[in-house]
Amino acid sequence: MVRTRFAPSPTGYLHIGGVRTALFNWLYARQHGGQFILRIDDTDQQRNVEAALQPILDGFRWLGIDWDEGPEVGGERGPYFQSERSDRYQQAVDQLLASGHAYRDYSTSEEVQQEREQAQQEKRPYLYSRRWMAETDQQAAQYEAEGRQAVVRLKMPREGICQIDDEVRGQVEFPWESEQDIVIQKANGSCLYHLASVVDDHDFEISHVIRAEEHLSNTPRQIFIIESLGYPRPAYAHLPYVAEPGSNSKLSKRKIDKYLKNPEFRQLYERGEQIALRCGREVSAETFNPVLVDFYRDVGFLPHALINYLLLLGWSLDDHTEQFTLDQMIESFSLERVIKSPASFDPAKLLAFEQREMDELPLEQKVPLMLPYLQDAGLVDEPPVGENSPYLQSIVRAAAERITMAGDILQFDDFFVADEELVYDEKAVEKRLLKPEDAFELLGQFRQQLAELESFDAGVIEVAMRSFVEQRELKFGQLIHPVRIAVTGKAVGFGLFETLEILGQQRCLQRIDKLLEHHGHGGAD
Image (cartoon, rainbow, N blue to C red; front, side, top):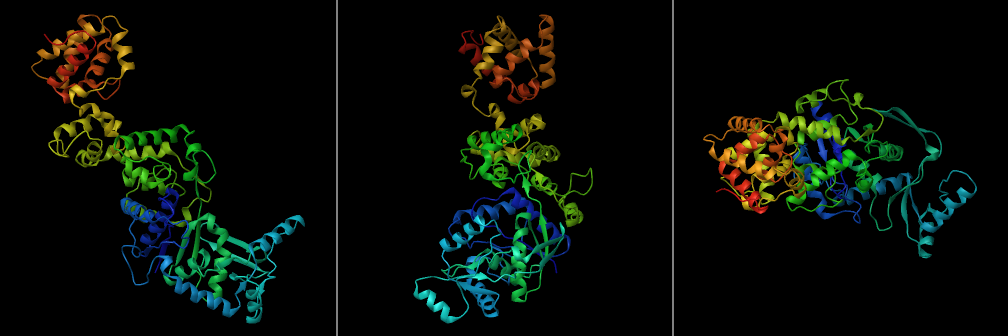
């Protein structure tokens, strides 16, 4: 049976590059009728963040990536936390020591560093001398009498070639002579990544190790451990990393200041930031960052749009197909179609995927997604302005493609604030109402026409406005801009006639009166 895995470390929030790797593992397992295992690599206790695990699990569930074994699911091969598997790792260490494939080393870090520096001075490749290797109990006792502490190192081969048949990269070779005797167990008894990962993959019966290409160089030493312990070798596939926007450098959450110089990345970030701040959410590079999955969930992305985009970030079915259902992803996915070169993160393309998904979503599914943002921003309470509210539905319908992510509904806060609390864009007022000599006069005159309309639907309002403009031989902008600013407080928005209809006659008149009175032009008689 095909069994794949993803093994995040709880050191921070879920990186979209990691999600891409998890997605490929999940798709491969599902396509072959296999199982996807989630395990937690928490051996590095100094870097682990207790609060980081739940966002990782929640992020996967939000994306629809489920796991067959792992945290909160269980399984017969558990535990699935490396911190709970120290006994198994110790068994492996003891076996490697007994077979001579590992040894106790009593060197100090200063002594090892001295050897490295000497190799540099002599312009030769560094290879640990094994000078402080204890080959007998007597040697170990002698070193310990000197106050030295032992770590356990692999005793790597010094000749020959390690061959890897990689499912993405083909045959890859590593000369054994270039591999170091890495530490697999610290002096305090804790075991390190290479050993723990190999033992876990064996115990969980992982058939395919599909991971980022940065781990390719780790593979020879892991194969040495596998063969030394007598384990079957899994298949390997090393994926290209996700690169920065417009670059081949690896995407990193720590470089957000650099990425913000990219206009498209900055636009995505600032758009999300506005939503988060309106909702009273924390905005920091550690938790609110377009490199992290939580960013997209927080601002109201559709999870399938992100999944669809990540599928094509380093994989391609053909030259034209970009839209996949989940079933189509599973049916079409193959490691043979993984692109070997890094795939650059493209914020504009991601937004295009999101826009398409949102445009195709039925209205009755859109509105419930947007309501929580209005509630978090304090713009609406519970019903009557609920997910079944015709008022809210009409706004979402009229906004159309102006809403890319659910949080974009907050752009239209003017529909939800009380008339007396409406805030005006002073620059727009200056440009469209204060500078033109007759703007307030025209606004007041048209206000009277609006008051006399017996029907207040968009079509009737449009006829009235066009008639008003034509009779006075005005340019349309001379009236449409002042009216929009008066009723919304803003210079831009969706169709003005739809805006007026949604707000209703009474609210429109009250808002126009408020603006006129504020600037000393009186209101209704």
